[in-house]
Length: 353
Image (cartoon, rainbow, N blue to C red; front, side, top):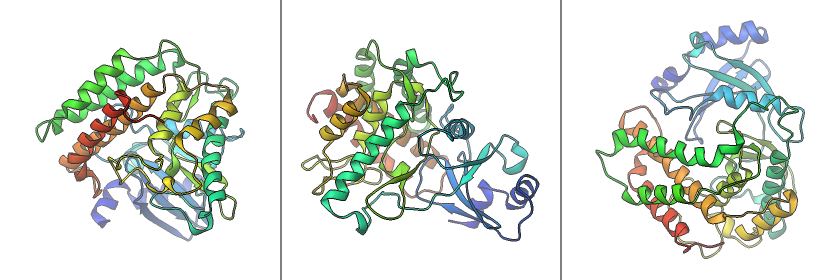
């Protein structure tokens, strides 16, 4: 990463002054950027003996509430005393005089995040199966939270969540297409959007929803068997339909024999190895753990791919406007149309689980 881009997203002198006032003085101070994420910016901050993580929105114009890091901070802070495995929160800041935007700090969790491959210590059928079971069991804990009791009773409007999700991702596409449509059109995604409008479930259970729950948004702690130490990236969390989280998780899970990944930069390909549960087995475990049936599964899976495509089209807009330093973003010219075809296959029943 260029020094110019780092200077654009954080004023190190101002941040040091803020940390000194809030946490006390420290002799060691260092800021580095974590490049693995593709949405909000994540920075590793050393402050004395403390290892912290700073989360802030990307620079430039952003779409609506897609990068609300203080919302992310609020939910993680509320979950500190629950069974949900979240990192310890440290500070939330809405003073744009520090680094030019809202941001928050949390303690850094050490371990393995599974993105492109599995660590050697997990490369047995038994431990691979446990990875899938951990993901489902930890999601069940999120959905079991008494959100009123932890102070999140006003965190969303769960009764109309699913309908609003469809509308929200329509609007995110519109925001992106304002710039990207001049480069190429994606007519199939508009067809998928119309199908979603016509197939919103009439009712659904209500729960705290993570909004971005997937394999690379959790960290597995040291040792074996696999054990999730922390759940990250709560920026899209709200109160709503828990079946959406399950549909989203399935989007990032590949079974043996699945078609070629529409976006291999984001969807891991190793979960089709011997031992990993199938998507169907993940659904069965979730239903058993929560008592929530995955009804209208085709809708939730199609909506999840639609959401992913919208996020990626937003990446493409930021690339075209020069507001990103991510080599993945230019690839969205081809990847988003491929995801539109993927969503249509789900709509038409050509990719059952």
